[in-house]
Amino acid sequence: MEGKAFVSGYYLDDKDLVDGIRALQEKSIEITDVRTPFPVHGLDKVLKMRRSRLPRAGFIAGALGALIGFGFQAWVFTQAWPLNFGGKPFLSVPSFIPVTFELSVLCAAFALVFGFLMRSGLGPGAPNVIFDEEVTNDRFQILLEVKGDNSEQLQAELQSAGAEGVQHHDV
Amino acid sequence: MYVSPVREPLISGEKSYSKVTEDIYAPMTGKPGKLWFGGLTLALIALGFGLFSIFITVWDGIGTWGLDRTIGWGWGITNFVWWVGIGHAGTFISAILLLFRQKWRTSINRSAEAMTIFAVMCAGLFPLIHMGRLPLGFFIFPYPNTRDVWVNFNSPLLWDVFAISTYLTVSLLFWYMGLIPDIGTIRDRLLPGLKKKVYNFLSFGWTGSARHWARHESMSLILAGLAAPLVLSVHTIVSFDFATSVIPGWHTTIFPPYFVSGAVFSGFAMVLTLMIITRKAINLEDYITKAHLESMNKIIITTGSIVGIAYITELFMAWYSGVVYEQYAFVNRAFGPYWWAYWIMMTCNVITPQLFWFKKIRRSFLATFIISIFVNIGMWFERFVIIVTSLHRDFLPSSWSMYSPTWVEVGIYIGTFGLFFTLFFLFIRAFPVIAIAEVKSVLKTSSEKFIKKGK
Image (cartoon, rainbow over all chains, first blue to last red):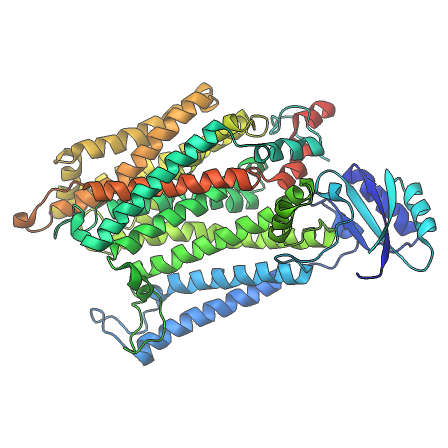
């Protein structure tokens, strides 16, 4: 984000925000980011966001966890050191289920959380720029990137789209 | 947005978004009160005593406990199961109630999840100490070693290791991921300085971007879907510790569902006990209302009744099985030397929650507070009864024995209370007790302000 400039406008209600976004979209102004204090439902459709692939990542990691969990137990009790427990079969599938289940949940959870953090560029001390500290309180913010010298024009567009206040930011 | 005309508001008072932030942030600002310092001091003293008792156990050996060859599991395992049970409410509230789209979850999930994590930490201590040699605790993990042996994957005790460590990890991840937007909120309220830097670090650079929120929602939903069966699996596996043995009174197929409902029952009771005090102490009465109380009490009465039915089923099955040992185990429980423990359990767990059928009682903070303490006591005695009464008179009358704890065992139990409350007091000051962003997201459908407007 170094060396870029942005124009931001804020709204005080999520409904106004969605109306504002629609107004900007009609004029085909590219919206860089929308920042809200809580998840606004339906915003993903308005902004035409792609569906997150996190569930898929979670499924793959969970399946891997299950395979590793089951495979390892099976290997230990049939290959590495077969132990006879009261004449029961070495490959005693039912008793491998709990550990297999726990490992698949663990792996899927790690994949989901780290996938979320990495895709979003979040992490301990991530150097993200916060343009308006009230966004985490009660402001719904639209961010537009300034290209060339259209800052004034973008500010006017935001204002006409109903923004309560607009501002120019240099990063 | 659709506002239900029937449901009562979950957030009372005229709250705007910024008022929500302000109210929930307030207890974190300023100097903590006398109550907080007093509570923390008490908790630290208890923790210190617990650490001393653990030291005695490790230094002098497990002989300092009241156990013998007949009764190998006493307070240690009783307390372990009790704490794990308490640790079931948080993830139940945040995962299962998220899947059921229960909006009242938003005001209590954060603190309940914190309690879950602290309770599971307390629980995990007991098996570790019980093994006797703390520095060799890592033996429970399958790691390549010079002896070339692996752990016994057929043992429920090992499943416990996996279940509880997974549960702790996933609960922690879930809780912290829910926290980062709120830590961001706190960061943005702070004046520049070291504290702000620390919170910025902890907030993972949260910006509130719509893309992040979309992913966050998607992640939370799937995590909830994973955590829901996980919650059920943990106490199921704990119950396997007993159910897969051949001890009369333990060897029962009813154990998994019976233990899981008992766990949710006791967990909710503990959450209620603490939340009723906390909401008063830090002025969150508008966020944790009678509506929340009633919803939670309904879960208490459901799970409590399942536990009651399980007790009666056990008795019936003992009689119906025709096995003399099984029958003796239950007659001995109810009328043997530990009859008092059995009847405390029966009264606290079966009778007291039934009082919640009365609307007045389940909507009263005082009554709920008292009943929740009864439930906590009753559920502790349930574990004590299951463990001690089943063990103390085994197949060989010459080895029959009686058990009472020594001060060392009592000390470790007190110490876990110390650990739990120390962490809880620090949590209240360091992080928002209520999920700020989540409360804001239900404000328009569930707050008094908007429900009035809808009418």
